[in-house]
Amino acid sequence: MKARLTRRRALNLGVAAAALPLVHIRTAGAAGKLNVALWDHWVPAGNEAMRKLVAAWSEKNKVEVNLDFLTSVGNKIQITMAAEAQAKTGHDIMAFDMWSVHQYTDVLDSVDDIMQGFIAKYGKLGRAYEYLGVSDGHWKGVPVAWGSAPLTPCARISMFKDFAGIDIQKWFPAHESTPAASADWTYDTQLKAAEACHKAGFPFGFGCGGTTDSNQTWGATFGAFGADLVDAKGTITVDSDNVRQALEYAKRMVPYLPPDTVSYDDASNNRALISGRSAMIWNPPSAWAVAKRDAPKVAEDCWTFSNPRGPKGRLVPMRPYFFGLWSFAQNKSAARDLLSYLGAREQMEFLTSAVDGYDIPPYLSMSDFKIWGEVGPPKGTVYNYPIRPWHDAEYYVTGSSGPPDIGIQAWNRGLIPTMVSKLVAGQTIQQAIDWAKDELEGFTR
Image (cartoon, rainbow, N blue to C red; front, side, top):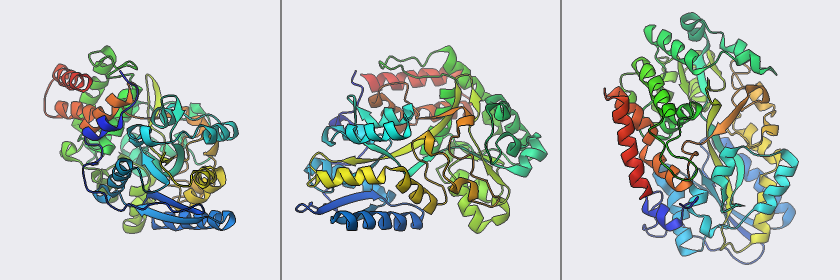
């Protein structure tokens, strides 16, 4: 069992559409020019901040930089990277999210030299970044804050107090604390809070569909119970006590979720919070940011904090971004220099501040950016959005117990949230396990 995806197999899985016609292809010119393709940030100020940084680097280094922001709407960025990988021409640097580094590892240069310098300066990265950024023992992407966002709880302060008797600001204050302060925030506590808020008419906005948010919410929940569907060698382990324990928990939770939980898309939980219909969701601060604009009274009553603790720890679902260097890049020297520049603390803090703290840097030593303590209302509402040392937590990627070529298929299939949705539909735990086992056997054939 290979511990990575070959590009051919990943494309056959439908991760990207390499069969589509080549679009938006640019050929890098002579020395002194650089073509860069990045994700089009949903916060417009983010793109402007990036343009300023790249312009400053360009002027200093006398390199002409063509900077393209490619939207994920219509899969434009995925289509572009697939087309460039196939044609072996295009940009020099490309932004990659989640599984894309493994998908294109065969046409990406190693960035071990850059990462060795960063790790020596900023500290070791968590396993989530290594799992997605390292292929065949080499770093194939530079982890960055740009677009990287965990799914952390965002709760209504007043509803938690009035309905569940929880002072969430006491457990996760907007200042340095200790692990003891949040010791009572466990999955059992979350279940009790969900029941209380549901009875009051404000259910938690958790989806059970095959979406990005549902994958992360239930994936991290399973991870916190040690409910691994496969092991590191790809051996199927879904029929286990830990998986049953996680499903037992899910079975107790689903009665307190919205009636349309199975049909949730990635915007459903946002709408539930902004409209005032939900006491808590798991989401980056994008929902809170929209509430600040459209429903200020809701925003003033929101608090973002770390995820519950389970038997295997406090796991925070993460979707990281990487900047990678194509092996066919025309200006590798300049590209490596720009990667080293953009991956440094100063630049990441500038970019994160421009988007009001939405982007999370990969190093724990960078969890002290001032922006998270300044943003409001209420002031400090996203202070605990990044993992802080006293959270005693770690970032987690759904499916990371097994090889990436299995993990990506489980993600695309929405394997874990679909198991939960079967409980919503009235199926038994054994039926959910049997279905998942059959799916996994198909993945590993």
